[in-house]
Length: 493
Image: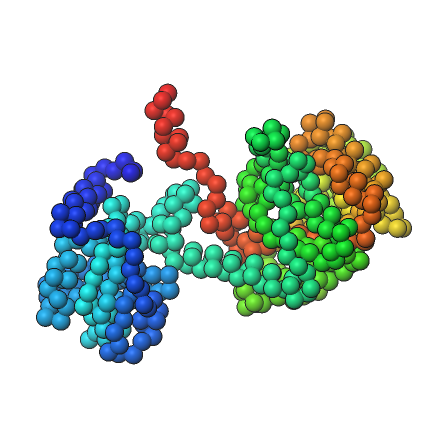
């Protein structure tokens, strides 16, 4: 229990006293079941005079002599309860007045009617306490002031701010629309490993854990089974997708989390231009079915997904915005330019310097746009272009100054892939923890043969962009340091 002081301590002690008294009267304040027949929305839509039986949390309580009122809320809505002398049994009124507080869960039965003010309500005949709360709810008008507390006690945040619950209901629809779209296009949903011997499919630092039975270190995946889904392409699956959680041991920001949900698809005999057409259709469908519109605003950015999606050349955009030719300029001048722009680079390798220059440029783009013609050095899993082997058949979706999705014609040349993996491994050995690991079992699969494939992935960042919130705010329970653990450490010291 939290450490309480003053008025809050008095409230807690009073509620503990009520629990004790209820038990002394053989009334269980925590029963295991209630036969709920109707929800609050159904009660509100019922005809006057209909008998209903519902349950939920008491949000407010008012006792006014011969009549008492309460607001009952469940997962579907809110309705007023009325306890009236001579119409509600005296025993029920006494139970309500003496033992029910805001925050308690109760079950009731009664008749739907309208009050003198015209508000549809339930005239109570029976009441059962289903859960006697000990801690008082935060005040409606003050709420939870500390943002960290809002994330830590998300359940309270959604009680005080029901609109927060709507965000997560919308998010569930977001993934449902995505899943239905992929299935309608002939893709089958698959499950691939979350624990991996080699963490592949993205530039990211993985979480490491230990497998006791095998006595080996393993990694939590950093992509939604990219290298596994490609193995399925070799096994004659032609269209697969997976929606699942991935884990990256990186810093937090309004756009980054360590644990989040992504979708990745792989499409045999297709290339990156096919992927661009498909993802444009998918994003527009999500916008219309989940949000009912295609025009959005995120911060200072405004964009319309129904507009034509501009194609932006990677090299030309960096040259226009910074004056740096990424194929001709040396690393020293790139570092100098980044310092001049007050941009921190992710490392001193050419790959990281080029990527940092691009990230500066991307902030200037509202989109929707496709970024194309990525250099090979920043695209270790993407097929090179025929007319220029230093460029790749890759695309990224840019919306509101950020990268929303990433796709490419997958590299299926085992010799080329091995060379790129070895360059990435050399970067890791030099201290770059985000460079990709060499996966020789994957190369062996490529040596058996994999058809031409287009792969693409996107995740929660799209949802947070469309709803104009940070990704952290769009997670039900973002990772937080434990309050109690921190307190126990302090006491030990």
